[in-house]
Image (cartoon, rainbow, N blue to C red):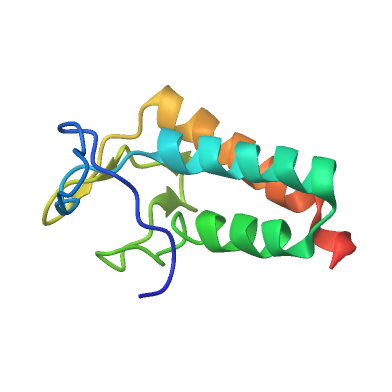
Length: 112
């Protein structure tokens, strides 16, 4: 498998269970990128930069549905993935999450 696997927002993942293909939200990906940024700042390990880029690509279609989450026509971000489709709402929270993720990734573009 390539890309990031986001744990569903529909229920808790219990130890020993498999994560189901349910709702995935931009906030989880954005916060993963922010955490990886902090790890990179602390340890200066380039592996964290690679993981940030991998996570960011979730917005660009490297996700389990192979669908773009960022809308380049509106500058907005869809509200995430459901089991079989993209949630086409473009709420402000999702757009802010995309922008936080993008600005964080772009900050490190020249460090590779």
